[in-house]
Length: 279
Image 1: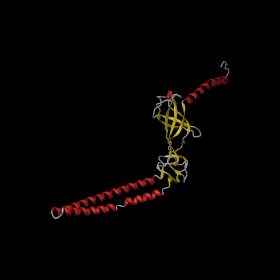
Image 2: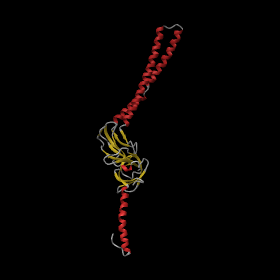
Image 3: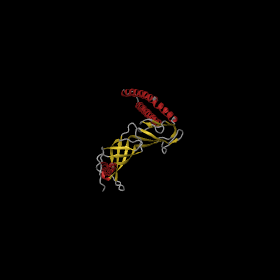
């Protein structure tokens, strides 16, 4: 810069040359305040079946949005439906119980009559004992019939549960990421049926330099800028600050929670995050 300015244009040119390094330095400082991050689902679930069987119907397809409790798929259920109907009939039939109660009522009256005759000393002791035994047997018959009826009701509930498990429901609000099986295929425990991703809220994962430790706390809000073509600026809240450093990179992990109620933001995006007040 040893040149001398003899006019106004020259002076402005020198001033511009002097300001350029300052502007570049300011841009570099602004860039230093942002950290690389990744936007991820808050949960990714591989959906399986609690029971084995032939897949009859897949209700959803890839890209569909589902709510918790929505039907995802159905297995063949004809046998289980018939089993449940049979168990229901058995549970509703209480003829043995009613018959036993009628018999018990008769034996009780007979026993009371025998008690009166015995008191009057006109009845043999053996006849009295026989009446008491028959009353006890009638009572046991009622108890056995009642227990059998309760067992039938439990079997009906179990049959209903087996039938219910033939319909696979969504365990959460999510987006269908992948459908692995088609109708007619055999479903078992080792064969995931589909994959769901919960994207409301989203998780923003970032590895932060050690110099930030103690300055980032749960509840702090930060600005998240997704990569193009999504772009935009969103506020997220810090929910997790790791207490264990990565010794190789001298960083620690931070998770932010980003609301996404309208599913506007997709997961799997790279992004930039800026924490307030950081150098």
